[in-house]
Image (cartoon, rainbow, N blue to C red; front, top):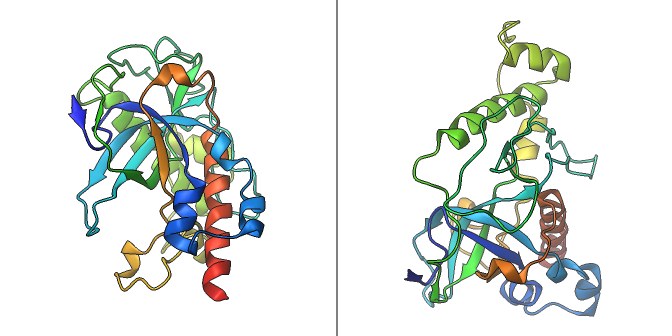
Amino acid sequence: MNMNHPPYNCYFAFSIDVAATLDLYCDGGDDAMLQKLDGLKDRVYAGYCVAIEPQSNEDNKFHTAYIRPVQQGLTKPYRDRRKPHYARPAMCIPILPETVHPRSREALQLSKPLPWSNCYHPTCYDVRARVPSERRDYSQLPRVIGFSPQIVKPLAEDARYYRLLQSGLDEDQVLRIMDGQEDAPDTGDASETDSQSCHMFFANIPGSEEPEEDRIFLPVFHIDHVLSNVPEISDPSQLWEDRDLFAEIVEEYQLE
């Protein structure tokens, strides 16, 4: 299976390509930027491709991919408490042979095991990024098997969980609502905090004339399709922190 982008439902390893992202957004960047971003390229993650957008750039250097990361253990919160991101340990799906989950969720079966232990998919850390258009053989990699209800139902549950937390309810009340022990209150329209949380990683490409939704900050990812090259994977909460930091640097560059 030779393709010029990671295929749908196929697992691969990835890291933020600092140099390529700076070239795209900041004319290559400078020493101060590189110092702030030190360590990002050394953190390696894994995940599978949820979707690939059709290429829209003239030089066809990149595809835009939606990626669902893998983590080892239950979901970790986003550590910057200034940000209203409501990740909780139960917001994940176990991947066989792992079966333990706080809400007893059914584990996801893959075409072949991942090379790491204690693997879960967080339901709240999906990421959108640019991936290089490079033809590679993905035939030997693990894949999600067909349509997997083990993924669809938890995603819907945790989206509701997230919205209820954003509305200001305490966690015990949210869990009672989720378990059908209590009716959900009418929270009205999305709050300002809700709006801010949806956009907290957005940044515009300098000089872009594309519509606003096409000017979201999309880092470039380096792809490694040989999973055995990666002895351990970093946590997706760290990926979001690094992405947030990079977006802030891009915004500072735009304001100069």
